Image (tube, rainbow, N blue to C red; front, side):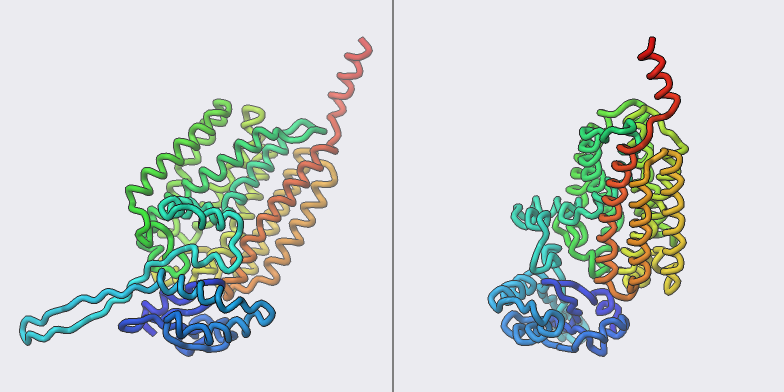
Amino acid sequence: MSVLRWMVRGVAHFGSRHIPHCSDSSLSWTTGHVRCVSNHWLLKQTCFCGTVHPHHWYQTTQQYYHHKWPSRLPQKSRLLSDIHKFYRASVSTKSSVAVDKNSGDQNKKTQPTFAADLSLDYGLKPTLPQRIVLKCPKTLRAYLQLMRFDRPIGSWLLFWPCGWSIVLAATPGSLPDIKMLALFALGAIVMRGAGCTINDMWDKDYDGKVARTAGRPLASGALSMFDALVFLATQLSIGCLILLQLNFYSIVLGASSLGLIVLYPLMKRVTYWPQLMLGFTFNWGALLGWSAIHGFCDWSICLPLYAAGVSWTLIYDTIYAHQDKYDDAIIGIKSTALKFGDATQRWLSGFALAMVSSLVVTGYNAQLAWPYYLTVIGTAAHIGNQVRTLDINNPSDCGDKFRANRHIGLLLFLGMIGGTLLKNTDLKDIFDISIFNKS
């Protein structure tokens, strides 16, 4: 099996796991062929091979759907439409003629090229953000895909530490500042988009060699580096305007995270711990949310919360990295998934213990009431189930486990609101108020 065939294995289209193979003038595919045994989970699939052509695919693809989803066989017209779409977008062949000056012979060499479209990976039932992206003009669609608007999970994971900190900073017995939550939510969308743009600019050449990322706008050529640079400047300008709505302490604190955002994509080239750098970056909001309310950080609360967030990031991003570990090993990208290997579950269990312990310390220092601790128990059970059932050799399972972490963020957010609403007012404050009323 050639390196090229290994690199492009696992390209998803219309929700399947077909494995493409290059030949001189066409692209063939399989779901479990002998040529693809580098991923042993593929052996669980039935092997069907054929040439990629819309009129030749239906019967084979229909068998695949019967094999994987016996009760969800798509309509023939819909399936053929998806196949035509994939065929037009993924396979284009151009020929060049090489002339041998010594013999005068002309040897025709055909070079297969791939103009992948990320929308092909949306499946038969796109999510709401993906449907919005699909309805946009082609150029606008490329910019939205560059900032990952079609995959909002990253924005959720960036927002939740901010939301937790804002809730903890609220006055006992009251709800968090809704305007501040909305401002940070907008900031999470913009700055996550800026971070993805920076990441894709650094990784343009690497992304083209990885099956899952080959369709990204910069790697596929849909946008140029200059386009991305202008778009990045626009996003950072909007992020700066949002930051300027906060107090001076928060402006300085927020601006100091820009270095982490820029350096994170480089870490995967020099260390097997880029997920740790991502944790430092993604959870900066745990510090910023409190300072935005009070104008300073209560380190006895903010630091344990920050540590919990970093541990959480190490969990979900290690799971995420297992999707690309084979490609990463080929092109020289480092990750905790490669470092931990088969010991991943033991490492994730340790990170889970650190996260839960930090959450307990946070709640104790913030004097939160019992609803918060119930959600911490629920969080521990949720993460424990993720770690216990994780199949690190199944990219689909890793992706599902990664996306499930948005529920953990929401669970803790609701628990913190309940714990703050039922939090007892300090006895000294009650005594002072009673003395004031008597006087």
